[in-house]
Length: 284
Image (tube, rainbow, N blue to C red):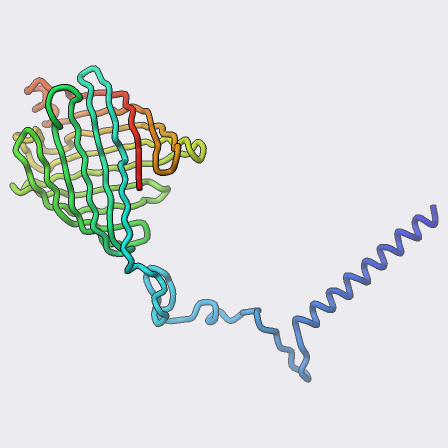
């Protein structure tokens, strides 16, 4: 028993001597004595001006303004997304719908295009088709200001618009796309689209979506009244077979309001509809 205790004490004493020697070696390595002055070796930066030099900074990178711009934003890149390509089944009618957009350009300047449309699966072409051609300027991380043109083709008169919008990623990762439209006849309207992605797994994703449309003027030839025109809410569950290809199922609910609802009722059109949808989301 005494031998065991003595052996343990010897081991502990030896370990203590070893650690003390190592600590002394580290301290000796970190500091060198030159007379009465002690100097820290290179590699330990304590001067805040060295860590973050004072002066003007580049807005997007935060680097000092006099540094060479190392962000290669002059090379053009391209991206295309078919966010919704779907078939909808409702009591009123079976429909098809597409919603796609994309861009080509640098980190700061882009040409952006958008298109969407909808129509019945039986009996005629699309009820409306929309195309936008926009210039996008990055104004903040994840945000771009957009200006350009929009052109609609409908059974009603074709209409052109000037577009001014903002698109980006809002706090808490809400995708946001808002725009003001001024028609060739001087009618002003607004649209806001908002999406969020809730990941159950890395491949199974639930996507709520909300679209709001409003008009400042009555446009009876397009079936629009002033005020809030309509909302479209959707809930889609997709599975990403690959990141670039994801089939989904879901539900879409559309509702008309105010004068727009009154116009639809007078023309015998539905003012509310719920559709079960199946579709695919793709990007490249």
